[in-house]
Length: 232
Image (cartoon, rainbow, N blue to C red):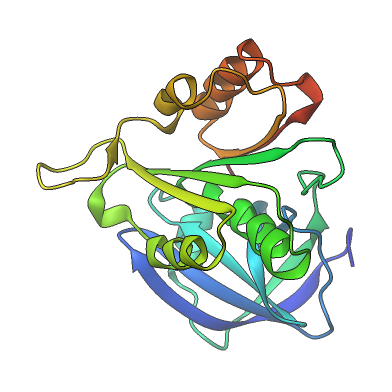
């Protein structure tokens, strides 16, 4: 129930890449959320951190992806969690949600680091539950090869759904990397010259969100079709 702390139990915890932890948290009652929303977790008595929901596991359980690299109170809290531990959180919260009826003909998703979480939830809902036929393009930016996670999952979605395209990009690749290199914003101008029929969902580093928003608007995207969530 939004606005009140409720208890949830950690039912899964796996380090999926370098500093990224994949958590499943199970609530006592069915948990209803809109794809793109987040939960605020009490990481100590003085601090509450927000984490985007990465998707539904079952009616009571949702996933979170947490990058513990920053090393702050939230990182320390999640690093110490074990399966069976209880946490306190509020939610669902936030207005960064999928807008299927905004008139856009093509959906563009751009995420960096753990900012991929709400985009994953949106894409899953659009493909699995709403059977959306509109083209959807995802750019996922990470730094190093060791940071890569969920790439196989998104590749499988791309193979299964003709209208979904997945692009993984590393900003600091090693010499053996054969995929996209640089920042995900580097590819916007070369890919399309007109974004007037697109909508964009941006989540991750603040610099990426700012740059992507400016590029997309300069290439015709409507102001009210650029949706973004800052990295928590």
